[in-house]
Image 1: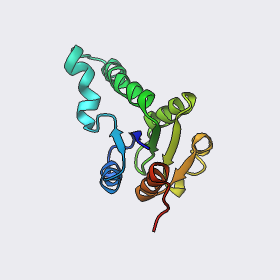
Image 2 (image 1 turned 60 degrees about the horizontal axis):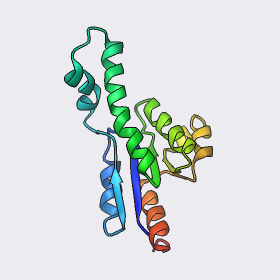
Image 3 (image 1 turned 60 degrees about the vertical axis):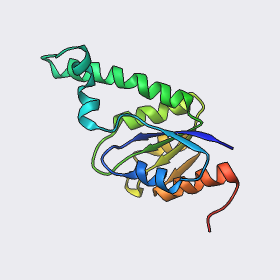
Length: 149
């Protein structure tokens, strides 16, 4: 079985690379948002022109990024959303809700400290993992039917 997996959420750590490296050999295609923070923030004004007001600067970028995000989530079989430690990721919460609304298989990757804050997001997920390796084990089980070890 092959899977198209969209990796969404926190962009400040290497969790995506960990999953992609450990999943090598599985029949899995990965996509993700633009993870260059500056490019993601500034794409709207770089393409459509400068904005003196930060709201409109961010608005332009968010809408252009949404084109990629929507396509990635809509084409995915599985959506993995990571909530990181340092930053409030409203975009990750939106992506999780969007994926759930579309009936996508959702895996949330979060830490125990976020259990209460993410209880509604976790309720929509088919799995809640705390480590990237657990996500890979889920993908391996789904694609090959084999358990870890």
